[in-house]
Image (cartoon, rainbow, N blue to C red):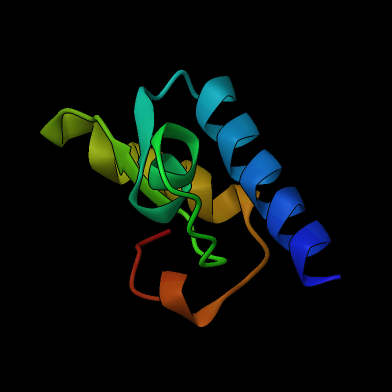
Length: 77
């Protein structure tokens, strides 16, 4: 069950990033698992490449694409 939820989360996040045409790359445990020794940690570490003027627009779109969560409460509408 946990692996299925993790896989769904990865798919949802990468689909959003690809729809937004936001360049990104996977870092951390997932990248290590693909490139070397597998190390499954149930977290997703990404680096998203945005220019400074794109950040607030990107965060608003991300907030609208996600279920409501307290972490987004500080982002203006």
